[in-house]
Amino acid sequence: MASRRLALNLQTALRSRAALNSVRPLKRGLATPITTSAGTKTETTTLANGFTIATEHSPWAQTSTVGVWIDAGSRAETDKTNGTAHFLEHLAFKGTQKRTQQQLELEIENMGGHLNAYTSRENTVYYAKSFNSDVPAAVDILADILQNSKLEPAAIERERDVILREQEEVDKQLEEVVFDHLHATAFQGQPLGRTILGPKENIQSIQRDDLESYIKTNYTADRMVLVGSGGVPHQQLVDLAEKYFAGVPNAPTSQAAAAIAAAQKAKPDFVGSEVRIRDDTLPTANIAIAVEGVGWKDPDYFTALVTQAIVGNWDRTMGTSPHLGSKLSTFVHSHGLANSFMSFSTSYSDTGLWGIYLVTDNFTRIDDLVHFTLREWSRLSQNVSEAEVERAKAQLKASILLSLDGTTAVAEDIGRQIVTTGRRLNPEEVERVVGAITAKDVMSFAQRKLWDRDIAISAVGHIEGMLDYQRVRSDMSRNTS
Image (tube, rainbow, N blue to C red; front, side, top):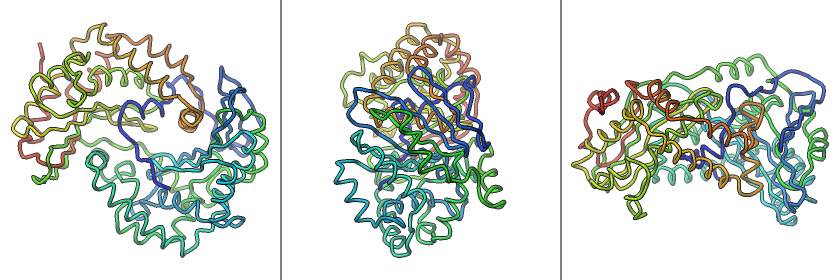
Protein backbone atom coordinates (compact mmCIF):
# COMPACT_ATOMS: atom_id res chain seq x y z
CA MET A 1 0.00 0.00 0.00
CA ALA A 2 1.22 3.44 -0.82
CA SER A 3 1.98 5.86 1.96
CA ARG A 4 -0.05 9.04 2.22
CA ARG A 5 2.44 11.77 2.88
CA LEU A 6 1.20 14.84 4.72
CA ALA A 7 0.14 17.48 2.25
CA LEU A 8 0.81 20.80 3.93
CA ASN A 9 -2.31 22.61 2.88
CA LEU A 10 -5.53 23.85 4.39
CA GLN A 11 -7.67 20.91 3.34
CA THR A 12 -5.47 18.30 5.00
CA ALA A 13 -5.04 20.42 8.10
CA LEU A 14 -8.81 20.60 8.44
CA ARG A 15 -9.37 16.90 7.94
CA SER A 16 -6.78 16.25 10.63
CA ARG A 17 -7.82 19.00 13.03
CA ALA A 18 -7.77 18.47 16.79
CA ALA A 19 -9.21 20.14 19.85
CA LEU A 20 -8.16 23.05 22.02
CA ASN A 21 -6.32 22.78 25.33
CA SER A 22 -9.64 22.73 27.18
CA VAL A 23 -10.41 19.28 25.78
CA ARG A 24 -9.99 16.51 28.35
CA PRO A 25 -7.68 13.78 26.99
CA LEU A 26 -8.14 10.08 27.61
CA LYS A 27 -6.03 8.65 30.42
CA ARG A 28 -3.40 6.73 28.53
CA GLY A 29 -1.79 3.56 29.77
CA LEU A 30 -4.03 3.00 32.80
CA ALA A 31 -6.04 -0.17 33.41
CA THR A 32 -9.61 1.03 33.95
CA PRO A 33 -13.07 -0.49 33.73
CA ILE A 34 -14.96 -0.07 30.48
CA THR A 35 -16.32 3.47 30.34
CA THR A 36 -18.51 5.07 27.73
CA SER A 37 -19.32 8.69 27.03
CA ALA A 38 -21.47 10.12 24.27
CA GLY A 39 -20.99 13.52 22.72
CA THR A 40 -23.30 15.18 20.23
CA LYS A 41 -22.32 12.73 17.51
CA THR A 42 -19.19 10.88 18.54
CA GLU A 43 -19.29 8.11 21.15
CA THR A 44 -16.14 6.82 22.83
CA THR A 45 -15.39 3.76 24.94
CA THR A 46 -12.14 2.73 26.61
CA LEU A 47 -11.47 -0.94 27.33
CA ALA A 48 -9.65 -2.13 30.45
CA ASN A 49 -6.34 -2.34 28.59
CA GLY A 50 -6.57 1.29 27.41
CA PHE A 51 -7.74 0.48 23.88
CA THR A 52 -10.24 3.11 22.65
CA ILE A 53 -13.28 2.78 20.38
CA ALA A 54 -14.81 5.88 18.80
CA THR A 55 -17.77 6.01 16.44
CA GLU A 56 -20.19 8.30 14.66
CA HIS A 57 -23.31 6.29 13.83
CA SER A 58 -25.50 7.21 10.84
CA PRO A 59 -28.49 4.81 10.90
CA TRP A 60 -29.39 5.55 7.28
CA ALA A 61 -25.93 4.74 5.90
CA GLN A 62 -25.56 1.46 4.03
CA THR A 63 -21.76 1.36 4.30
CA SER A 64 -19.20 1.91 7.03
CA THR A 65 -15.54 2.79 7.35
CA VAL A 66 -13.71 1.10 10.22
CA GLY A 67 -10.04 1.55 10.95
CA VAL A 68 -7.31 1.56 13.56
CA TRP A 69 -5.44 4.81 14.19
CA ILE A 70 -2.07 4.32 15.89
CA ASP A 71 -0.21 7.12 17.64
CA ALA A 72 3.09 6.21 15.98
CA GLY A 73 4.70 7.10 12.66
CA SER A 74 8.15 8.02 11.42
CA ARG A 75 8.65 10.23 14.49
CA ALA A 76 8.69 7.04 16.59
CA GLU A 77 11.89 5.85 14.88
CA THR A 78 15.63 6.27 15.36
CA ASP A 79 18.19 7.33 12.77
CA LYS A 80 18.99 3.67 12.21
CA THR A 81 15.37 2.53 11.87
CA ASN A 82 13.94 5.55 10.01
CA GLY A 83 11.53 4.13 7.42
CA THR A 84 10.39 1.19 9.58
CA ALA A 85 6.81 2.43 10.13
CA HIS A 86 6.23 2.83 6.41
CA PHE A 87 7.95 -0.49 5.64
CA LEU A 88 5.70 -2.21 8.17
CA GLU A 89 2.60 -0.70 6.57
CA HIS A 90 3.60 -2.31 3.27
CA LEU A 91 4.12 -5.72 4.84
CA ALA A 92 0.83 -5.76 6.75
CA PHE A 93 -1.06 -6.96 3.68
CA LYS A 94 1.41 -9.68 2.69
CA GLY A 95 0.01 -12.47 4.85
CA THR A 96 -0.69 -13.37 8.48
CA GLN A 97 -0.62 -16.50 10.61
CA LYS A 98 -4.28 -17.09 9.61
CA ARG A 99 -4.41 -15.79 6.04
CA THR A 100 -2.12 -15.78 3.05
CA GLN A 101 -1.84 -12.63 0.96
CA GLN A 102 -4.13 -14.23 -1.62
CA GLN A 103 -6.73 -15.07 1.03
CA LEU A 104 -6.64 -11.53 2.39
CA GLU A 105 -7.20 -10.05 -1.05
CA LEU A 106 -9.92 -12.59 -1.88
CA GLU A 107 -11.87 -11.91 1.33
CA ILE A 108 -11.89 -8.17 0.72
CA GLU A 109 -12.80 -8.64 -2.94
CA ASN A 110 -15.65 -11.06 -2.16
CA MET A 111 -17.24 -8.57 0.25
CA GLY A 112 -16.83 -5.72 -2.27
CA GLY A 113 -14.77 -3.86 0.28
CA HIS A 114 -11.72 -1.62 0.22
CA LEU A 115 -8.65 -2.07 2.44
CA ASN A 116 -5.90 0.52 2.71
CA ALA A 117 -3.28 2.06 4.97
CA TYR A 118 -1.01 5.08 5.22
CA THR A 119 1.86 6.38 7.29
CA SER A 120 2.55 9.94 8.39
CA ARG A 121 5.12 11.47 10.70
CA GLU A 122 3.01 10.82 13.79
CA ASN A 123 0.43 8.20 12.83
CA THR A 124 -0.03 4.87 11.10
CA VAL A 125 -3.54 4.04 9.91
CA TYR A 126 -5.14 0.83 8.67
CA TYR A 127 -8.75 1.07 7.52
CA ALA A 128 -11.46 -0.75 5.57
CA LYS A 129 -14.64 0.39 3.87
CA SER A 130 -17.45 -2.16 3.51
CA PHE A 131 -21.17 -2.83 3.68
CA ASN A 132 -22.52 -2.69 7.24
CA SER A 133 -23.08 -6.44 7.28
CA ASP A 134 -19.38 -7.02 6.57
CA VAL A 135 -18.04 -4.83 9.41
CA PRO A 136 -17.32 -7.86 11.68
CA ALA A 137 -15.25 -9.45 8.91
CA ALA A 138 -13.44 -6.15 8.24
CA VAL A 139 -12.52 -5.74 11.94
CA ASP A 140 -11.35 -9.38 12.04
CA ILE A 141 -9.04 -8.70 9.10
CA LEU A 142 -7.71 -5.44 10.61
CA ALA A 143 -7.00 -7.16 13.92
CA ASP A 144 -5.29 -10.02 12.12
CA ILE A 145 -2.92 -7.89 10.06
CA LEU A 146 -2.07 -5.72 13.09
CA GLN A 147 -1.35 -8.59 15.47
CA ASN A 148 -0.41 -11.59 13.34
CA SER A 149 1.50 -10.40 10.27
CA LYS A 150 4.11 -12.98 9.28
CA LEU A 151 6.77 -10.50 8.16
CA GLU A 152 8.34 -13.22 6.03
CA PRO A 153 11.91 -12.61 4.77
CA ALA A 154 10.85 -13.15 1.16
CA ALA A 155 8.09 -10.54 1.48
CA ILE A 156 10.52 -8.12 3.12
CA GLU A 157 12.89 -8.40 0.18
CA ARG A 158 10.10 -7.91 -2.36
CA GLU A 159 8.77 -4.83 -0.59
CA ARG A 160 12.26 -3.40 -0.33
CA ASP A 161 12.30 -2.98 -4.10
CA VAL A 162 8.76 -1.62 -4.14
CA ILE A 163 9.59 1.04 -1.54
CA LEU A 164 12.79 2.03 -3.34
CA ARG A 165 10.75 2.60 -6.51
CA GLU A 166 8.23 4.59 -4.49
CA GLN A 167 11.06 6.73 -3.15
CA GLU A 168 12.25 7.42 -6.69
CA GLU A 169 8.76 8.63 -7.61
CA VAL A 170 8.55 10.86 -4.53
CA ASP A 171 11.94 12.38 -5.36
CA LYS A 172 10.48 13.55 -8.70
CA GLN A 173 7.76 15.57 -6.93
CA LEU A 174 9.31 18.93 -6.13
CA GLU A 175 6.72 19.89 -3.53
CA GLU A 176 7.42 16.69 -1.58
CA VAL A 177 11.16 17.28 -1.81
CA VAL A 178 10.91 20.88 -0.64
CA PHE A 179 8.74 20.00 2.37
CA ASP A 180 10.92 17.07 3.38
CA HIS A 181 13.92 19.42 3.37
CA LEU A 182 11.89 22.02 5.28
CA HIS A 183 11.25 19.52 8.07
CA ALA A 184 14.86 18.37 7.99
CA THR A 185 16.23 21.88 8.50
CA ALA A 186 13.52 23.15 10.89
CA PHE A 187 13.83 20.12 13.17
CA GLN A 188 17.35 19.06 12.27
CA GLY A 189 18.82 16.11 14.10
CA GLN A 190 15.43 15.28 15.64
CA PRO A 191 12.80 12.60 14.88
CA LEU A 192 10.31 15.06 13.33
CA GLY A 193 12.96 16.13 10.83
CA ARG A 194 13.25 12.68 9.27
CA THR A 195 11.36 11.60 6.16
CA ILE A 196 8.54 9.07 6.21
CA LEU A 197 10.11 6.64 3.75
CA GLY A 198 13.55 6.91 5.32
CA PRO A 199 16.94 7.15 3.56
CA LYS A 200 17.84 4.67 0.83
CA GLU A 201 20.46 2.93 2.98
CA ASN A 202 17.84 2.23 5.67
CA ILE A 203 15.34 0.85 3.18
CA GLN A 204 18.05 -1.49 1.96
CA SER A 205 19.02 -2.64 5.45
CA ILE A 206 15.81 -2.86 7.55
CA GLN A 207 15.34 -6.40 8.86
CA ARG A 208 12.59 -8.42 10.52
CA ASP A 209 13.95 -7.66 13.99
CA ASP A 210 13.56 -3.92 13.36
CA LEU A 211 9.93 -4.40 12.33
CA GLU A 212 9.10 -6.59 15.33
CA SER A 213 10.78 -4.14 17.70
CA TYR A 214 8.73 -1.26 16.27
CA ILE A 215 5.50 -3.21 16.82
CA LYS A 216 6.39 -4.10 20.42
CA THR A 217 7.35 -0.52 21.18
CA ASN A 218 4.49 1.31 19.49
CA TYR A 219 1.54 -0.95 18.71
CA THR A 220 0.21 -0.79 22.26
CA ALA A 221 -3.42 -0.43 23.35
CA ASP A 222 -2.92 3.00 24.95
CA ARG A 223 -1.81 4.35 21.54
CA MET A 224 -4.54 2.74 19.40
CA VAL A 225 -8.08 3.82 18.50
CA LEU A 226 -10.64 1.71 16.62
CA VAL A 227 -12.83 4.13 14.67
CA GLY A 228 -16.18 3.51 13.03
CA SER A 229 -18.16 5.85 10.79
CA GLY A 230 -21.38 5.15 8.91
CA GLY A 231 -23.92 2.43 9.59
CA VAL A 232 -22.00 0.57 12.30
CA PRO A 233 -23.56 1.02 15.78
CA HIS A 234 -21.21 1.96 18.57
CA GLN A 235 -21.96 -1.04 20.78
CA GLN A 236 -21.32 -3.45 17.91
CA LEU A 237 -17.85 -2.01 17.42
CA VAL A 238 -17.19 -2.14 21.18
CA ASP A 239 -18.13 -5.82 21.19
CA LEU A 240 -15.82 -6.47 18.24
CA ALA A 241 -12.99 -4.59 19.95
CA GLU A 242 -13.40 -6.70 23.09
CA LYS A 243 -13.26 -9.82 20.95
CA TYR A 244 -10.22 -8.90 18.85
CA PHE A 245 -8.20 -6.23 20.73
CA ALA A 246 -8.69 -6.87 24.46
CA GLY A 247 -5.41 -8.82 24.55
CA VAL A 248 -3.25 -6.04 23.10
CA PRO A 249 -0.69 -4.97 25.75
CA ASN A 250 -1.29 -1.51 27.17
CA ALA A 251 2.41 -0.53 27.24
CA PRO A 252 5.74 -1.59 25.69
CA THR A 253 6.66 -5.10 26.82
CA SER A 254 10.27 -4.27 27.76
CA GLN A 255 12.03 -1.53 29.69
CA ALA A 256 14.21 -0.77 26.68
CA ALA A 257 11.17 -0.29 24.45
CA ALA A 258 9.52 1.89 27.09
CA ALA A 259 12.63 4.08 27.29
CA ILE A 260 12.67 4.48 23.50
CA ALA A 261 8.98 5.38 23.43
CA ALA A 262 9.47 8.01 26.16
CA ALA A 263 12.46 9.60 24.39
CA GLN A 264 10.49 9.94 21.17
CA LYS A 265 7.88 12.10 22.90
CA ALA A 266 10.33 14.92 23.71
CA LYS A 267 9.23 18.23 22.18
CA PRO A 268 11.49 19.10 19.23
CA ASP A 269 13.35 22.39 19.01
CA PHE A 270 12.65 24.62 16.02
CA VAL A 271 15.89 25.72 14.37
CA GLY A 272 16.16 28.93 12.37
CA SER A 273 18.09 27.65 9.35
CA GLU A 274 17.97 26.90 5.66
CA VAL A 275 18.75 24.32 3.00
CA ARG A 276 19.27 25.28 -0.65
CA ILE A 277 19.59 22.91 -3.59
CA ARG A 278 20.35 24.85 -6.73
CA ASP A 279 19.49 23.17 -10.01
CA ASP A 280 19.29 25.56 -12.96
CA THR A 281 17.96 22.79 -15.21
CA LEU A 282 14.62 22.95 -13.37
CA PRO A 283 12.02 25.30 -14.87
CA THR A 284 11.04 26.91 -11.55
CA ALA A 285 12.30 28.08 -8.19
CA ASN A 286 10.46 26.23 -5.39
CA ILE A 287 10.72 27.87 -1.97
CA ALA A 288 9.12 27.09 1.39
CA ILE A 289 9.46 29.51 4.30
CA ALA A 290 8.12 28.72 7.77
CA VAL A 291 8.12 29.82 11.38
CA GLU A 292 7.45 27.45 14.25
CA GLY A 293 3.73 26.76 14.20
CA VAL A 294 1.32 25.39 16.77
CA GLY A 295 0.45 21.89 17.97
CA TRP A 296 -2.98 20.29 17.76
CA LYS A 297 -3.87 21.24 21.34
CA ASP A 298 -2.51 24.77 21.26
CA PRO A 299 -5.14 27.45 22.04
CA ASP A 300 -3.94 29.28 18.90
CA TYR A 301 -4.66 26.29 16.64
CA PHE A 302 -7.72 27.73 14.89
CA THR A 303 -6.35 31.27 14.96
CA ALA A 304 -3.33 29.95 13.04
CA LEU A 305 -5.67 28.47 10.43
CA VAL A 306 -7.62 31.72 10.08
CA THR A 307 -4.36 33.67 9.73
CA GLN A 308 -3.20 31.21 7.10
CA ALA A 309 -6.46 31.69 5.20
CA ILE A 310 -5.94 35.46 5.21
CA VAL A 311 -2.62 34.97 3.40
CA GLY A 312 -4.43 32.52 1.13
CA ASN A 313 -3.52 30.37 -1.85
CA TRP A 314 -3.16 31.41 -5.47
CA ASP A 315 -2.40 29.90 -8.87
CA ARG A 316 -2.15 32.01 -12.00
CA THR A 317 -3.67 29.22 -14.10
CA MET A 318 -6.99 29.68 -12.28
CA GLY A 319 -7.54 33.08 -13.85
CA THR A 320 -9.53 34.63 -10.98
CA SER A 321 -6.71 36.21 -9.01
CA PRO A 322 -7.82 39.89 -9.23
CA HIS A 323 -11.07 38.94 -7.47
CA LEU A 324 -9.58 36.90 -4.63
CA GLY A 325 -9.80 38.41 -1.17
CA SER A 326 -6.15 37.77 -0.35
CA LYS A 327 -4.08 40.95 -0.54
CA LEU A 328 -0.98 38.91 -1.36
CA SER A 329 -2.63 37.15 -4.32
CA THR A 330 -3.72 40.48 -5.80
CA PHE A 331 -0.22 41.94 -5.42
CA VAL A 332 1.60 38.86 -6.77
CA HIS A 333 -0.76 38.64 -9.74
CA SER A 334 -0.53 42.30 -10.68
CA HIS A 335 3.29 42.27 -10.57
CA GLY A 336 3.83 38.85 -12.16
CA LEU A 337 5.98 37.63 -9.28
CA ALA A 338 4.99 33.97 -9.10
CA ASN A 339 3.31 31.02 -10.75
CA SER A 340 1.56 30.04 -7.52
CA PHE A 341 1.75 30.13 -3.76
CA MET A 342 0.19 28.05 -1.00
CA SER A 343 0.02 29.08 2.63
CA PHE A 344 0.02 26.28 5.20
CA SER A 345 -0.42 25.63 8.90
CA THR A 346 0.73 22.11 9.69
CA SER A 347 0.33 20.84 13.23
CA TYR A 348 1.85 17.97 15.16
CA SER A 349 1.26 16.84 18.72
CA ASP A 350 3.46 19.51 20.30
CA THR A 351 4.68 21.83 17.55
CA GLY A 352 4.09 22.73 13.92
CA LEU A 353 5.12 24.69 10.85
CA TRP A 354 3.29 27.83 9.69
CA GLY A 355 4.39 29.28 6.39
CA ILE A 356 4.12 29.51 2.64
CA TYR A 357 5.24 27.56 -0.42
CA LEU A 358 6.20 29.70 -3.44
CA VAL A 359 6.74 28.61 -7.05
CA THR A 360 8.03 31.02 -9.69
CA ASP A 361 9.74 31.10 -13.06
CA ASN A 362 10.44 34.83 -12.77
CA PHE A 363 13.99 34.21 -11.58
CA THR A 364 15.09 37.85 -11.53
CA ARG A 365 12.25 38.78 -9.14
CA ILE A 366 12.68 36.07 -6.51
CA ASP A 367 13.96 38.61 -3.98
CA ASP A 368 10.87 40.78 -4.59
CA LEU A 369 8.55 37.76 -4.21
CA VAL A 370 10.06 36.78 -0.87
CA HIS A 371 10.28 40.38 0.35
CA PHE A 372 6.64 41.24 -0.32
CA THR A 373 5.46 37.90 1.04
CA LEU A 374 7.18 38.54 4.37
CA ARG A 375 6.01 42.16 4.26
CA GLU A 376 2.47 40.75 4.19
CA TRP A 377 3.31 38.59 7.22
CA SER A 378 4.50 41.72 9.04
CA ARG A 379 1.26 43.51 8.16
CA LEU A 380 -0.66 40.81 9.98
CA SER A 381 0.93 41.98 13.22
CA GLN A 382 -0.21 45.58 12.76
CA ASN A 383 -3.19 46.03 10.50
CA VAL A 384 -5.83 43.37 9.89
CA SER A 385 -9.40 44.30 9.03
CA GLU A 386 -12.48 42.54 10.35
CA ALA A 387 -13.65 42.09 6.75
CA GLU A 388 -10.68 39.93 5.74
CA VAL A 389 -10.94 37.96 8.98
CA GLU A 390 -14.61 37.25 8.28
CA ARG A 391 -13.74 36.13 4.74
CA ALA A 392 -11.04 33.80 6.06
CA LYS A 393 -13.39 32.38 8.70
CA ALA A 394 -16.07 31.73 6.08
CA GLN A 395 -13.57 29.86 3.91
CA LEU A 396 -12.41 27.85 6.90
CA LYS A 397 -15.95 26.86 7.90
CA ALA A 398 -16.79 25.86 4.33
CA SER A 399 -13.64 23.75 4.09
CA ILE A 400 -14.51 21.98 7.33
CA LEU A 401 -17.88 20.90 5.98
CA LEU A 402 -16.53 19.98 2.55
CA SER A 403 -13.75 17.91 4.09
CA LEU A 404 -16.22 15.69 5.96
CA ASP A 405 -17.95 14.28 2.90
CA GLY A 406 -18.20 10.49 3.26
CA THR A 407 -17.65 7.89 5.95
CA THR A 408 -13.91 7.59 5.30
CA ALA A 409 -13.36 11.35 5.73
CA VAL A 410 -15.39 11.36 8.95
CA ALA A 411 -13.49 8.33 10.27
CA GLU A 412 -10.20 10.07 9.55
CA ASP A 413 -11.37 13.19 11.35
CA ILE A 414 -12.44 11.16 14.40
CA GLY A 415 -9.31 9.02 14.46
CA ARG A 416 -6.89 11.92 14.20
CA GLN A 417 -8.57 13.89 16.98
CA ILE A 418 -9.11 11.00 19.39
CA VAL A 419 -5.57 9.66 19.04
CA THR A 420 -4.20 13.17 19.58
CA THR A 421 -6.42 14.67 22.30
CA GLY A 422 -8.82 11.97 23.46
CA ARG A 423 -11.92 13.77 22.24
CA ARG A 424 -13.40 14.86 18.95
CA LEU A 425 -14.60 18.41 18.40
CA ASN A 426 -17.58 18.06 16.08
CA PRO A 427 -18.10 20.52 13.20
CA GLU A 428 -20.60 22.59 15.19
CA GLU A 429 -18.11 23.10 18.02
CA VAL A 430 -15.36 23.99 15.57
CA GLU A 431 -17.65 26.47 13.83
CA ARG A 432 -18.38 28.11 17.16
CA VAL A 433 -14.69 28.41 18.08
CA VAL A 434 -13.76 29.75 14.63
CA GLY A 435 -16.69 32.18 14.69
CA ALA A 436 -15.38 33.80 17.87
CA ILE A 437 -11.98 34.70 16.37
CA THR A 438 -11.47 38.43 15.80
CA ALA A 439 -8.99 40.66 14.01
CA LYS A 440 -7.43 41.39 17.40
CA ASP A 441 -6.83 37.65 17.90
CA VAL A 442 -5.15 37.38 14.49
CA MET A 443 -2.86 40.32 15.16
CA SER A 444 -1.98 38.94 18.59
CA PHE A 445 -1.10 35.60 17.00
CA ALA A 446 1.05 37.31 14.36
CA GLN A 447 2.84 39.43 16.96
CA ARG A 448 3.72 36.36 19.01
CA LYS A 449 4.42 33.83 16.25
CA LEU A 450 5.50 35.82 13.18
CA TRP A 451 6.95 39.20 14.14
CA ASP A 452 10.77 39.02 14.31
CA ARG A 453 10.76 35.23 14.60
CA ASP A 454 13.39 32.87 13.23
CA ILE A 455 12.49 31.13 10.00
CA ALA A 456 13.31 27.86 8.27
CA ILE A 457 13.85 27.99 4.51
CA SER A 458 13.88 25.17 1.97
CA ALA A 459 14.66 26.15 -1.62
CA VAL A 460 15.06 23.86 -4.64
CA GLY A 461 15.59 24.65 -8.32
CA HIS A 462 16.57 27.79 -10.18
CA ILE A 463 17.21 29.80 -6.98
CA GLU A 464 20.29 31.88 -7.75
CA GLY A 465 18.27 35.09 -7.35
CA MET A 466 17.29 34.38 -3.76
CA LEU A 467 18.96 36.62 -1.18
CA ASP A 468 21.04 35.19 1.66
CA TYR A 469 19.42 33.96 4.87
CA GLN A 470 20.12 37.03 7.00
CA ARG A 471 18.65 39.37 4.39
CA VAL A 472 15.49 37.26 4.25
CA ARG A 473 15.35 36.97 8.04
CA SER A 474 15.52 40.77 8.41
CA ASP A 475 12.19 41.06 6.58
CA MET A 476 10.48 39.37 9.55
CA SER A 477 10.49 42.66 11.47
CA ARG A 478 9.78 45.23 8.76
CA ASN A 479 7.45 48.14 9.48
CA THR A 480 4.71 48.15 6.83
CA SER A 481 3.10 51.44 7.69
